[in-house]
Amino acid sequence: MGQRGIMKRISSLFLLTVLAMALVLSGCDVGKKDSGNGKVKIGVTVYDQYDTFVSQLMECFQEFKEDNVEIVVYNASQSQQTQNTQVQKMIDDGCDVICVNLVDRTDPTAVIDAAKKGDVPIVFFNRELVEGDINQWNKLFYVGANAVESGIMEGQLAATACLADKSIDKNGDGLIQYVVLEGEAGHQDSIVRTEYSVNTLISSGVEVEKVGYAIANWNRAQAQTKMSQFIDQYPDGIELVLANNDDMALGAIDAYESAGIIRSKWPAIFGIDGTDVGLEAVRDDRMVGTVYNDKEGQAKAMYRLCIILARGGDITELSDEFTIDDGKYIRLPYDKVTATNINLYIKR
Ligand code: GAL
Image 1 (spheres, rainbow, N blue to C red):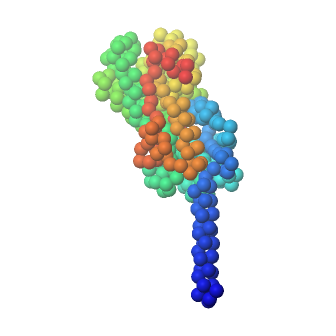
Image 2 (spheres, helix red, strand yellow):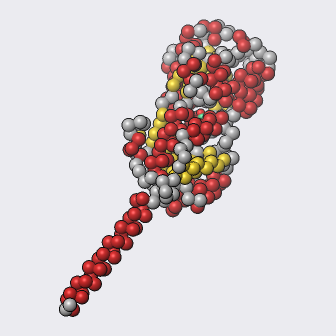
Image 3 (cartoon, rainbow, N blue to C red):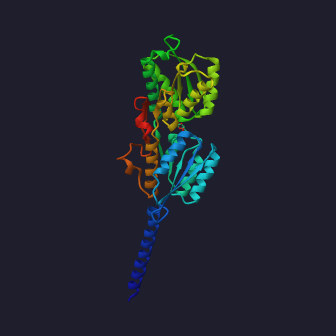
């Protein structure tokens, strides 16, 4: 073989080596996404495991688990710093995808930076981060619901009841004296539900008078304390309670019960979520209505999205089943629940 022949051989060998290396590398990248042997490891961190709606959402999520899937769940106990540490640990432990129920929805920077560095996609849920943050990386997604819709529906439920049942206006002054029990300050659902429920009530033709607002952080005991103070101030002056969620509506009910006030003297009380305890209260006519926050649908969307992302797929694979907005958001619709359709929800 002449010198030219040898050179040709060397360069084709070199080319082959480069090609083989490229294949191996791209194989790592594209095929990398699950932990190997088809197994998928999903990490989850919730802002507070004692939150009634979030814990029921997680129960639904676990029900989707298949044999080749491992799910690890952490409780951030209302500390963003704890949650940041948990996210880093889940990345180090080899999670293929992580679901984050942010403690502070305005402070996802550490979570996003860690995810980018470890190249692990994140599915945020229930506590919505701002648009500027979710757009920081193409592997960030959100599953939840549209808070505006829940506020409008709660306002519609209350308006229908007030217009149909004149006995809600107990003092007969033509005005409905109302109280709003609000979730955490700064949470997208609190701000929006308060605004839209009250505005919908008014635009539906109900004349109202605000007795008071109180923040009770989604919490039943805090709502009971706040409501007891209102009852002390206005013993029979409250005709309607709009609570941002069921737990706080139940706290209002607890307050009336422990004040020894009989049911016929209670205001009309409304909640949002359709948790087990919330639905029972509607069934037993302690709460007039609630708005169903579709935990089954949200859990399903989260789970399916996790599996797709873990296997290196794309959110658009879910477009037959769910509406996808901006290639990043899946929001499940709410539903109105009253005594007339309660059976459809209680059996879910
Ligand atoms: C809301 C829900 C509340 C509470 C909150 C926590 O969507 O209605 O009950 O769970 O999320 O972020």
